[in-house]
Image (cartoon, rainbow, N blue to C red; front, side):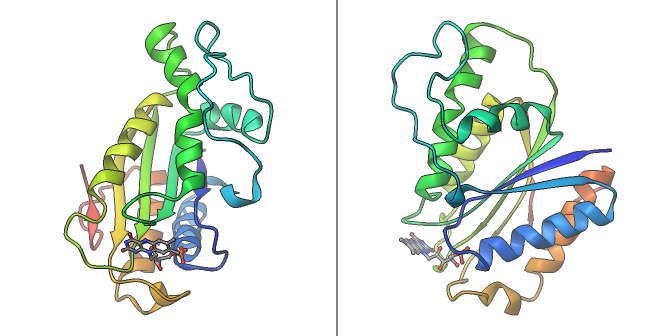
Length: 200
Ligand SMILES: Cc1cc2nc3c(=O)[nH]c(=O)nc-3n(C[C@H](O)[C@H](O)[C@H](O)COP(=O)(O)O)c2cc1C
């Protein structure tokens, strides 16, 4: 059974990212996946403080809510990062998660430890504006984060013009696509017919 670990990076519970995440997880669950959703804004953890504490061991020496998440990340088959755009970026808490993956980056690239499990990665996002490059910078960040934790960015769903809480429900395909993507990631079926799918 594939395990899916989703990081919900919006502070707004019941908002657009949350709804998109739930649709994805519903699809994944219906396809037989085991799903875990982490609300990042309910967790207490710092961004990387650049103490160098992980440089030789690959173990982060900060002890907070992130500590348990390292194991969760290592054990998952599919990692999903879901964040709205805040100032053309992922949210601060999502960025804190990204930065704290430095310990795993050290294990992979400095200590040359074999990645415990090859994983797949997904990026889900929404933004209010319609700028062509709205998600470009964040896609790079997420790809780099996923690489650090031993995952490959497999697919994404990013929707523009979504602002008010719940507006994603009015979008013609967003929730349907998220559900199909969740199922497709678990079953390993082709994703290219999912509406508005981003395939790197
Ligand atoms: C602090 C803040 C900054 C934002 N910056 C952007 C932005 O740069 N570009 C954009 O398209 N939308 C921006 N938005 C709008 C949100 O991305 C949008 O309302 C989104 O639907 C919120 O998703 P949520 O309901 O999952 O939190 C911003 C919203 C907030 C609160």
